[in-house]
Image (cartoon, each protein chain N blue to C red):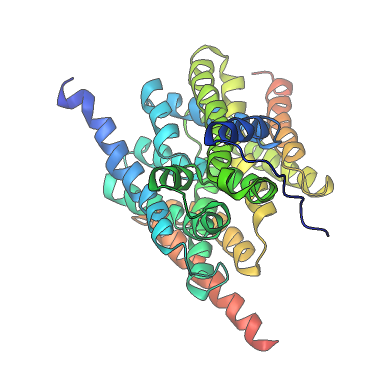
Length: 113
Length: 245
C-alpha cells in the first residue's frame, strides 16, 4: 500500500478511533465513582448534544451528495412532518423516521423528478 | 416493580456470550441500527469514502453520531484536527455510560480484555439493552453476555453499512436521497427521546439553530462553536431554572 492509499485509514485512526475510544478507556479507569448527574457530566453532555444537533441541521439545510438535489423547502417540511408524526405516535422513533423519509420520497415523486 | 429474577446455574463465558448474542437479535434496536447504518454507508459512498474504510469505521469507532460527524466533516474538507476534536467531544457522553455499566457486569474474576471489549461495545443501544437484561444473568456470566449483545448489534450494523454503501451506488438518486435523509431523522427522534434533562433538550434546539447559522455566516470551526456556545448556554439555562426553584 502506498502512503496515498493509506492516508484515509490513518486519518480514520487519528481523527476517529483514538479521540473517540479514549473516553471509553477513561470510563474503565473511572468506573468506580463519577456520578451520571454530576455537573461536569451534565455540561459535557449538553455540548455533545448541541454538536450532534448542529450536524443534523447541517445535513438538512446544507445537504451533502444526492440529498442536495431535493429542494430545501421539501427537506425542511419532511423533517417537520417526521417530528410531528414522532410526537403524535408517543415518541416512536420508527414512526418518526418512516414518516419523515416517506414525506420526502412522496414529495419528490409528486414533483416528478 | 419487583427486581428481575436472577437465574441460577453456572454457565461458562461462551454460553453467556451466545445468550447475549441471541438476546441482542431479539432487540428492537436491530431495526434502528439497520436503518442508521444503511444511511451511514450510503452517506460515506456519496462523499467518496470506500466500502472498507466505512466498514472499518463502524468496527473501530462504533458510534453512529461520531461517524456521521467524521464522514460529513472530512468529506467537506475540514482539517483532521477539528474533526478529531468534534468526534472526541461527541464521545464524552460514553464516559458516564461506561462508568455506570461496568460495575453492574463486572465480577472479581473478570479479566481486563473482557472489560475493554465491553467498554468498546458501549453505545446508546447496547448500554440500554445491557442495563435492562444483564441483571437477570448470574454475575459471572454478565461480561460475556454484554459482549454477546454488543457483537450481535455490531454484526447487523456492519452488514447494513456494506448494504448502504452498495445501494448508494446502484439506486436511483431519489432513493439515495431518502437513504441519506434517514440519518437526520433517526438522530432527531432518538436524541429527543433520550434527552431526559432540560439542559439536553435546550442544547438540542440550540444546536439545530446555531449549526446552519454559523455555516451561513462562514464562521470557522463551526461545529466546535455550535457545541460550546449551544451546550454552555443550555447548561446555564438549566442551572438558572434549578436555582429559581
